[in-house]
Image (cartoon, rainbow, N blue to C red; front, side, top):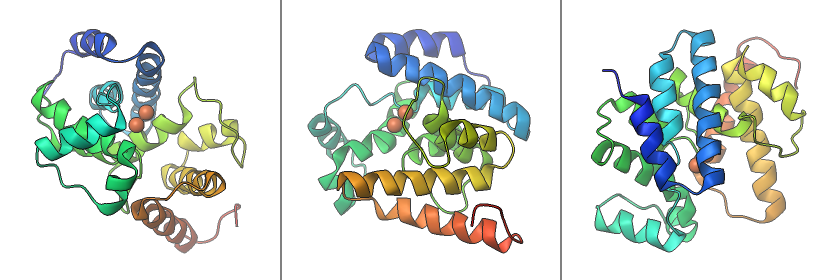
Length: 201
Ligand SMILES: [Fe+2]
Ligand SMILES: [Fe+2]
């Protein structure tokens, strides 16, 4: 199914604060480029990228109450760190308000913040594009440019590096971590190491 990217972009521009909109555009184009490299649909990547943060114009309290209102299951960590729920609520809005039917796109939106073990290629692309899009400037180890290159050569290793950096950041901030973030890290750590050695460890 083809979606009207221009229409989605126009609507999301009205919905999101300016910085969040341009972040979403960056994620969309970065994800589309990655899709071209890895044989995924650039259309789906653009759609998921534009919509991945479509619930992020709401406050944390509003996000939590919207999830309750729409019977979206809330885990204990999501109850405590309710910004995490913008991903699940975003997938809900993408379906109900933007008419996105494809589960592949909806699940890429659902898992963009924590990742999950054994992600699809599109899920990996959105998870990574969210972290490396051109407006992002966070310090990382290895440096962001290196992670960016890895995103266009080895998706599994890039997910491992991003999950590791995310965990390191949350730890340094003292922010409680969604157990799924650690599961993502452990899965991809194991996956790249069982593939026969790598230069990072
Ligand atoms: Fe997000
Ligand atoms: Fe984002």
